[in-house]
Length: 537
Image 1 (cartoon, rainbow, N blue to C red):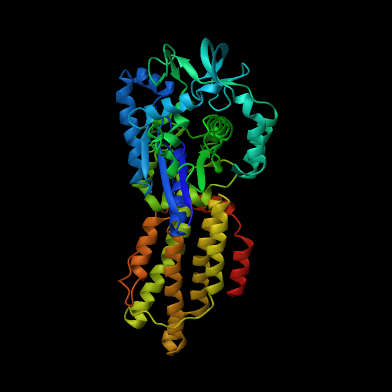
Image 2: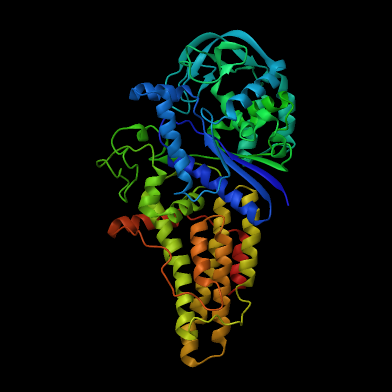
């Protein structure tokens, strides 16, 4: 058994949560559930970054107190746990949790040998809370940079260039996928500059954690926020060792836009403080709408902000035709389509590398084609036939026809999740449902029943065992659906059949377009699954 600390990033709370962050939460939740099922001891934590200048400016724009804005929006992030069926163990808020400020102050002092003051002038993006070396627009926010001139505290990042390169190059800090690992190695090889780790109280508008011993300065929000991985473990009281150095793996799940902060700045800060670096940095790409990265801007206001849900035509649920929607509300999506549909789309549709465009059409097509018509139809057929032909009593006999594909699926799923490839993992699971449906069509239990064939018991027993196995395999990905399938298929006598997944099928041309897009986007199954399918007939 391993001890695993698993974290997400903590987002700014300048607006309500969007589907892009829901992707990260769901990915981390799958990993947490998966490792718990393997018998590992897991701590899964998330939270919110309340101390950003973005939050201050959002409050000013609304004409409300910063405290009121961050409390309101942080509550919306915490509320995602229920709708998304998340299993995190801790949720930390950097402006309100009593563990955080003293932990950040202790961490600052632990790094004091690498901290110094100097004057700095540079170009700053408030959206990224980051300085940039040129006068180009911010690559993330497509916005002009602001020139800032002030005296700040700096961290000697340059001191750790060789050590960081060695840690990542050797795999002691594992960065997945390989494209991101290569990107960060190239960044380090090009040279590292010391970076500013404080802001003036005036520019921070007095919001944030003051620098210990220098109340005219506020600790840089990224230094503050990265510290949450330790402060949530009660670093201030020295109780973090149980889950930091005491963990076999320290896994960070994050988006590609913050890779440098987590793979360069944060490990260097940890080394400076005498702490171990993370062991795994797992990076996802972006969700987009109409090719644009999903952000929280639309949820802050404007047409369509009330629901943020796209209808099957791709328009905002609250807006007019042609509304450019740059954010999608995950809670609204769950209310409209259900948690299984949302989680399944995020896990089946998003590639290991590369951005993916979200539309409700794609979500509906994936749900109806695979969950309703594929998996749900299989379970309903099997349970109904056991009731029709054997009065609900599960036969004890089995055939071996589906054994290989079931056995292959679990191994491929474990291998894929270790590689941070949710698409391949869910494809392996769904391949079992596909092969089981083909097995039904090949064996024709209704014909066996009509002919009085003794093989019927073995066929039905095989199908029930496969549905039970699917419930187990689905548990990390769709915990709610897994429980419903298990409820339908457990025991010697099965419960009455109940449809598992309601259809959300768009009508007419919209359906045809959706299915055409889905067909072209379905990833190829793992080669071992193909082999297993052939072996099964």
